[in-house]
Length: 335
Ligand SMILES: O=C(O)CCC(=O)C(=O)O
Image (cartoon, rainbow, N blue to C red; front, side, top):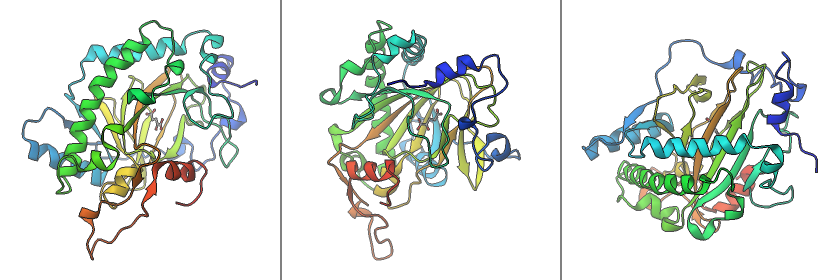
């Protein structure tokens, strides 16, 4: 099957000042028109090495309630580990097209893993300026190593090293989020499947775009997982909707960006907010991001935690298997 990768379209557009019409977003979505230009508060940046746990819990819980998003610094992942992950991903996308196509997700595959470009246009018939690679990195029993690139040769090592560290970051954040609701530290992780919680790596590759004012890399959405831990490169582009304004996430060197996803909003019965966000593209530079989506196993039923429910706080969401939630969300069927 012939597929137009955005990377190839971008190369053809290098000497042009235009982009194909299917990439031009409606005016209600165009970044140049919809980005808020006034004074805005910064997305919270939290020092994860804070020794006073009570203080850390308050910071994380309040950012998760007010923003559904925060950045973490001093998170304990060595810079070399993050840099190696980034180089491995960048080198993969710089390989010849036929090498990348070896990992292409078959059009009829049920799973999202593999190299790809979103094939279906969205409801307005529009496309996004991005190619991607998805593969699980944890637990081992759920990894399909056939979808981990062979090139560069250190790709596997880079992902395994990053995975070991990112799991520790996730543990700490889940603990704080649980304590922040007055629960035991293990409550959230356990409700999401405990040791069976799945870590889905995605690399977003956004090539330079002649009209970043008109296109989007990723359209507005909330993440269907529980928590997202994202490594950006130095090219900013992530935006979050806060108080009805699209505002930029500042690039903080060596920080990780954390999103609260739908499953945490559900578990917390709406107390933690699943954040609406989108990604812009750049005129000259390639933007790349490495989100890891922390997903409950497919059969896991997720609903509001019973410990939180009272007469005054009745359940706001139906308990649902994660696979059914994901199916409805991806197919735009009401939950
Ligand atoms: O690239 C980014 O900063 C955001 C990516 C994103 O939201 C996604 O892949 O779902």
